[in-house]
Image (cartoon, rainbow, N blue to C red; front, side):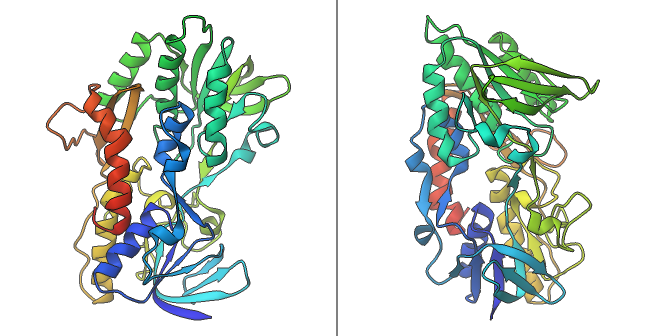
Length: 392
């Protein structure tokens, strides 16, 4: 058993950036608990699946991104006991803390779609949400010359909230550029709107209609039969189900809070980490803070949101340690870069009020080659060299 002043659960963007910022602020006794040996920049994976990025460029070893002054405990978290200030590990050990930062990300629930796990990575069935399948996505894209190419998005909250749309638009251009390609692209979303911010919803609808991309809302993927190459959908409005044939299907699975959060007293009724939406402090435990996808913050779960949350969390955690009032506030700021084709993108940027909050001196809702380069090169550069080092 060891005890630390600050224990951080999860070495994703939220956990690493918070750790680095705390270290720079003078907190030396820090541990990060994460079983992984690699850290991935996951927003690039849809571009890998579209042939625009090499997946090896999206990962680095944990030893390269975790500051050497911070202990990396390479175990899975199995239980959190906030009253006792204990975190239990899968090696039957436990760690004690004075302050806890929960940054455990989100859980991919592939098992919620009948038949999916048995055929994933085969029979034209793939996903861009797992590193091992992104190359398969691109291979399928190159091979598929006819039939339905289906891109799905679930009704549930997801991380990388516009990853399916990035896949959809770049696939459309790839297919159009091949004169002999007769594949038919279809977007099936379980959501009831294309985008929660009206300005960007209109732009999204305009691009879909101008490109003649077939799309339907309130359509949830519930079953995949890889051998028959059939996908079954449920229409939320009527409850009816129907089956579509496919040559290729790119699945975004339903997602939820990590089980270890759901099963703890730190969760809300839906299982998410229950934090104050402005201070990021837990609503019942003052020595616990949360960041990123595992929280119940009412904004789209994106890396850009973590970038805005991290300085607020660190400032308020330091204030809590010093017994001072928590003055830093997060306003829900996030950003969603959407590639509408190779070399063109727009960036939706907004806060809790779901109104545009753009930070660049151009209309970010209109496609622009500059915004594509920001998405493809600028944001990853900032991510590795600034955000993870606590500078963003």
